[in-house]
Image 1 (cartoon, helix red, strand yellow):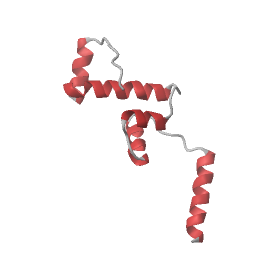
Image 2 (image 1 turned 45 degrees about the horizontal axis):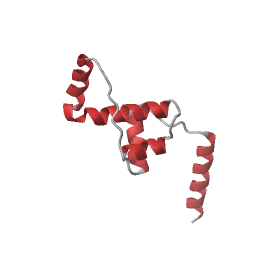
Image 3 (image 1 turned 45 degrees about the vertical axis):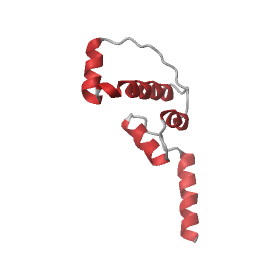
Image 4 (image 1 turned 90 degrees about the vertical axis):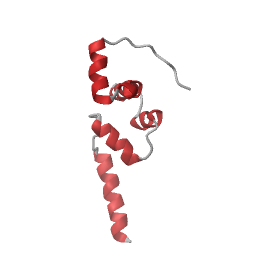
Length: 92
């Protein structure tokens, strides 16, 4: 179930966004912006954000967040996991 949250924005802002995204896409754009900000603030995970926005698949999720400026840091743990995966592939 979705909740409607009334948001007031200056008319000039609405026009600028509508020009770029289209008038009909404003609600989707606003939802995405709220979810992106929740990820930035650490309120929800990237996986939960993708779920809320109906984004399926890891590649689609990564592409969406990259366009949004939310690039996931490549941690030492991720490097180690990639190294192990690579070794498993080589050993086959």
